[in-house]
Image (cartoon, rainbow, N blue to C red; front, top):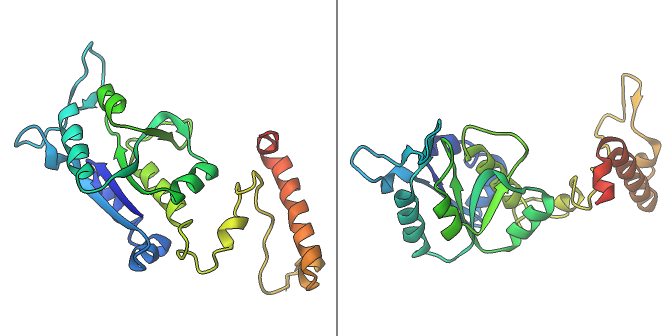
Length: 225
């Protein structure tokens, strides 16, 4: 899978992709990520990519021309499965969406900034609009990093134990059960006996019961869906 990201602040995306699983995915050749400075397609020598909004109002708007040129040039190099705009009014990102995107082809992500991007770019080029929650950030770079991480770790071969992703929270609309490691007795706080029993059937039953209980207590809306 290849992911292109358009942004006016590429520096914000240097660290998230240079460490841990995202670095491993790239080193293995399972995922490639290219971060593009939108000012490369600026409308003038000053690097302008934004302007005042029609109708007045506070906040600058990212212009059509730089975005259209960037999208069209990058689209000549590969066919995108989705052209994604990160925006608070997009569809809420969740685990099922991450699963679907990880199974698809190449992606292009547009990181909004300032007041957003010209609506005509959304109308003509964007195929999927994604929000990571009901709040507003300074730009789309952090959401882009979050989404790439969620997608990238699902690509076969990225995780050392490929069954690990299948037991993560939200995979079955359930939160993950409690987990424990050594020592089995720390300050008198003991690991549940069932996990020490070696009986895999009982362990799986216990984990499922714990997932249901935790989900009911913390996120009952997941059980409704």
